[in-house]
Amino acid sequence: MVDLYYIEDDPNIASIVKEYLERKGFKVTICVTLAMAREALNNYVPTLVLLDWNMPDGRGDSLCHWIRSNWKELPIIFLTARGDSTDIVLGFQNGADDYVVKPFELEVLYSRILALLRRAGNVSGRYLSCDEIRMDLNCQVVSCHSEEISLSAAEYQLLLYLMRNKGKTVTREKILEQVWDVKGNYVNNNTLTVTIKRLRDKLYQPNCLKTVRSVGYRMEDTI
Image 1: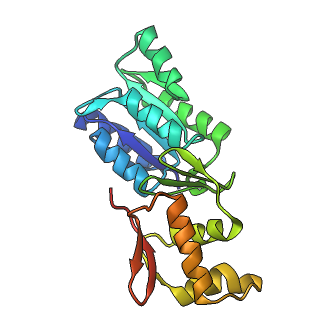
Image 2: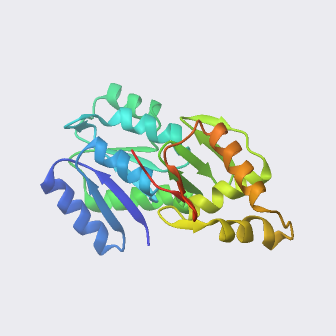
């Protein structure tokens, strides 16, 4: 199923587009503010984003730029009444892949979404994130606060395991088993402690990487 975020504060337009696209088999999540959209994106990266320009708490082009700086391949379509050539150019300059001006035909919007997805593919499974930490699994790139972070193989695999289990407490024993033991690299608890410390240092002591005393660790969003 295609997961789609639609950032739109007009309930009438949002409901019409949502109903139509869900009949086509999409899962549509409506975000009525830019803040809600940022929170949703930090929790889960969808297949595609539809974005209005004028929002109650800011301009859609700023969110578009933020999305593109964090998820380079995530498809974005502006869906807005602002049809001036200056606005259209600005939308593309901030990272949009397509630009649809209201009023529009639902069938045309659907066709543009399908065309964009054919070119981009489904990138939602490519990205993991927690607060300001991002992982691009295809490129094996980790960034924090938009800065690329260089990790050792063990640090990368540890972070990947924690991110894939975001929201869950994972025991030290399970981490040792999944990150090291399955590859035949049997290490002790001290190796895990040292690797966690190095990882925290490189990621600027992130609040989202929690220590669960006497148990293990947990990644969870805090912002």
